[in-house]
Length: 457
Ligand SMILES: Cc1ncc(COP(=O)(O)O)c(C=O)c1O
Image (tube, rainbow, N blue to C red; front, side, top):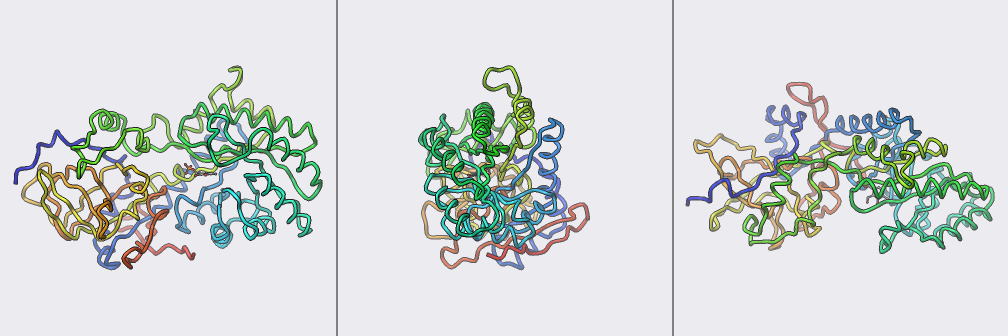
């Protein structure tokens, strides 16, 4: 069957990742697919370390006293926690299991930040025992922290008060102005049982200006709290640093051109439902840009405001620390024809590609790693389905223009999946095994080394 011409199919080539080149060239991907007899993720901890160093460099260049907590929810692999500990970073945890994992992989208790709503007594007790900072989300939680601190006679509970962002009043997280005033009063009354270290927020979306504005408001809140005799010397601006998965041209062309005909079953996506797969500034550069914003009266930059207030800036990036730190490999298990395109079925599920479960699509082009180079080359559009009985279980609804016809036994590599894609929604549906995580380091060698990750939960 003659397939529709190539120009019909928008492309979103992933930002090149030099570390995957020797991995693919060495033939390791096919060997591992054979060994695991199913899909697998590979993680690249050196990229994590490089991202962490870049963030710290930006803080140093701006002369801002700062501390980075890796938001562990973005990936379960132990190796990233190990790298955070080795790199002098902390870890943001949101469950007792995450807290135990972080401690077990070398992070000091006082370098933990406990986030999330209504944390539960077990988690709060562990946090207090280990000297972790608790980002308190509600007044009843604060009461519980104070009660535990008083009963435990341990060291003082360390807390930040999480602020309900005025620009996102419908968020279910954080405390409003009145609740914050009450919280400050209760912190004062708690006396030595508690150290009120400051305020925190996490904003949805990736825009820098609202983050800078709210950060400046938190600096002011610290001044108010200090005037009441509280320590208030830290602000956490949460995560949400943007990541660029593709180049500007491809992204804008895609947004302008995309329409239901580009997707299996004519599925319609609104452009606003997609993660912004390109961002003009991303990762550490976004922190530099954020610190250079002039919020409030526009006179001083955020960096100056933070410095002058003698406040420590805390960051909780997940996705940005994991940029280019892993990819996911599936094996093609079947190929069938549809009108004008093909459906490729792989040996795993979209539960290992979480974006598919947010009424959206993981857009960076998957890369075909064929068993053999085909004689024919050109444009061969195909969507990618999962090995399950669910009609909606598609790894890629979009018709990807592959350079040769995908065949059974070929591999499909989904690039840059370490941030949230790999495991936040994973499930052993159909009794399929969860894809293992392979740690690949020393990618500078002709044959990279690998081992299994040590995640234990
Ligand atoms: C409180 C908090 N901190 C940090 C993060 C990490 O965000 P990101 O991975 O976008 O950096 C999140 C994500 O939901 C969060 O809720």
